[in-house]
Amino acid sequence: MIIAVDGPAASGKGTIARALARHYGLPHLDTGLLYRAVAATVLRDELDPAQEADAVAATSFDDLLLADEWLRTDEVGKAASVSAHPLVRSALLQRQKRFAMQPNGAILDGRDIGTVIAPDADAKLFVKATPMIRARRRHAELQKCGSTVSLDRVLSDIRARDDRDSTREQAPLVAAPDAAVLDTSFLSVESAIQKAIALVEAQLARKRTTT
Ligand SMILES: Nc1ncnc2c1ncn2[C@@H]1O[C@H](COP(=O)(O)OP(=O)(O)O)[C@@H](O)[C@H]1O
Ligand SMILES: Nc1ccn([C@@H]2O[C@H](COP(=O)(O)OP(=O)(O)O)[C@@H](O)[C@H]2O)c(=O)n1
Image 1 (cartoon, rainbow, N blue to C red):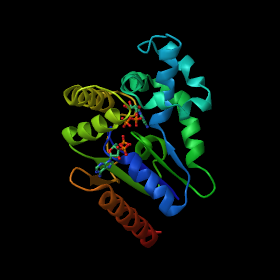
Image 2 (cartoon, rainbow, N blue to C red; image 1 turned 90 degrees about the vertical axis):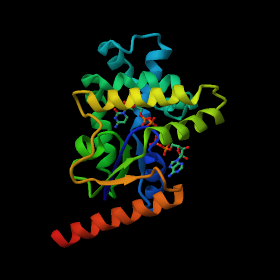
Image 3 (cartoon, rainbow, N blue to C red; image 1 turned 135 degrees about the vertical axis):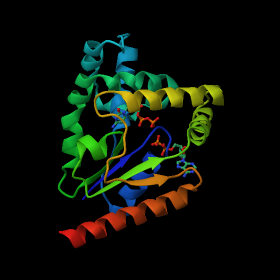
């Protein structure tokens, strides 16, 4: 069984995807980390994120990098706009598809899972929340890591990233037509997880009756 979880920054998609992975006993891939690893490699090697060839060269990063806390910083998040380069996306495509095709299935979260990576997923969620609520969540996370960045700054970064992710030509951030939309703005983590499980179950039940 493949479950696709998409949505903008700090919507809660990672929290939900991890909970679904525990609930269904499936492996989980946070695909945003792959783009963050490319961004971190570009920054570390003093390459130019705006240059597609530089960003493509950074796609052969060492997997150990995926565990590095630096990937979660604002600095790397901003440089993750390397994801707009079509050749970066195609360099990471097979890896994500392979993860999705594991024998018992998998759960992937990102921006284009339900539309590009696993268009035939058994269940698809599109997780959203208002920009201000997402900014507050991300701000709290960054503060915990010792960052002094202001809430206003985090909000404007989130808006800029939403805009870049939604308007890029290849694999833009958009809900798949068959995805269930889950707005977590006014839900606790626990209620968001319970709603997500209910939405997945409803999609699986519908699938069973039509096949
Ligand atoms: N429903 C929720 N209510 C409050 N905080 C949440 C909720 N869902 C997630 N969070 C918190 O918001 C932050 C971002 O969540 P995360 O799942 O990492 O988002 P994403 O993967 O979409 O970037 C985390 O600190 C997480 O604990
Ligand atoms: N499937 C995906 C996942 C992430 N990304 C890109 O990678 C960046 C970082 O993703 P992320 O999921 O770690 O970001 P947050 O939502 O956690 O802030 C996003 O802003 C997207 O530009 C993407 O293009 N496609």
